[in-house]
Length: 298
Length: 287
Image 1 (cartoon, rainbow over the protein chains, first blue to last red):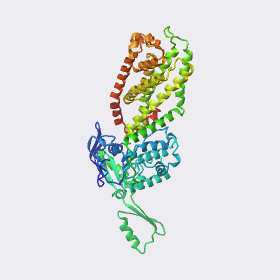
Image 2 (image 1 turned 60 degrees about the vertical axis):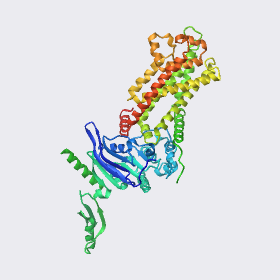
Image 3 (image 1 turned 90 degrees about the vertical axis):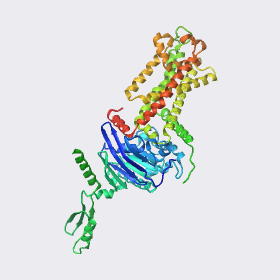
């Protein structure tokens, strides 16, 4: 087993750069991801999310900079390291003629030598139930619908019970119920200390599952924090609204707590159906993107 | 829960045999299985047609030389061009990337591929040989030793040709190159004694034919299947067993020296973004 200090961060990069010819995709990424974090990478297409993840997965060597994933350089990591990392990619069309259970059994074989603290591979029936594929165990992979195929991809990323899980757009094509189930599954994984790094285009999803969000633009990190702290970025005010008996009143404020304290303490105020709507993540994200465009246009 | 871990070689082998079992099933027991049955049918029909056509005024008929030639062709079509096209597809559909993401996935995958090719070729060999033996007893191996020799030469042939197929699959960039290589393989069959003895062809074609392994593999099969006097029809009038082993050995060496390096380069090159590109190409162009 790769030696890995339990207190060390799961991922650490310093000055990570990637260029293809004159095109600087990444201009120096410094990132530290603690164990158990669920980190969501956001950013427009072509901004280097996939490149970053591929470097962390050990599938691509950076042009410059240092990378440590679970304590080792992924580009030269061994199979014991591989056994602790799960990967869910976007466009798998492989093993189309196999059945679902066959593929998972097969992939599971490779993790059997790495049983230790937990049983590896994840018992197939439990795993199928976790991703909601129990009814499709004997279905041919090519006959799965897009969303179900995606669940299989997620299951194949989880089969080795990874300490670190990378997922590229895992919920593309999921129906709302499947998405909800998947979020619950993510919650239960981070409970057992699995570190998760995922990309998504769905900001609601990012808000729901992430313990931390990193926004990439122009080859660098332009925002980094919990969904809460990002929403509180000072691009906008929170909206407090209530029904005062006659009409709906809307008040914008930087500090809704202070405002509410005053409002509720006022005996003359009639307050019904109170709502506080804070800056949504979408508002923040779109503002960030607009700003980064202005900066790069200059 | 704590469990005892099983050793890597054991689980790699288990995964490889599982892969071979599933791939054989999906190959043989589904729609594509028809193609494997077509081969023997073609062989029998051709042998009936050619049963009275003698080769270069000898006692040997074309039916007799056709069978070993077809066996050589099928080994090369399966292990070289067939394997190459499989690898190309698996590079693009994400199979290779998936195996790269799994501990010891690549060795397990390649071992599984080797087992599949070996078993598939053995099955094809017997699918062709057994009906031939029933309808044309004079063409089949005369003894148990003969059957063993056929099996032995087939295994040698598969072992020699698979690295070449892997090398080709790793070097090919697109379907066009693959189509040319496939056409070339069938063209090669024409000058490799599959349809007519090489000795009857002009000298320069004989030279080209003898460079490639198909002729030598066919020669090995003919040595076992045909009566001793059929050697007269070969170049030099003998079976040239030593030369056969040397030429097949050289091709094995080329494959073994080139394939691992080419495969490693190809495997290093596969990434998620390449798979996305391939999928988008397939969606827009259909191949």
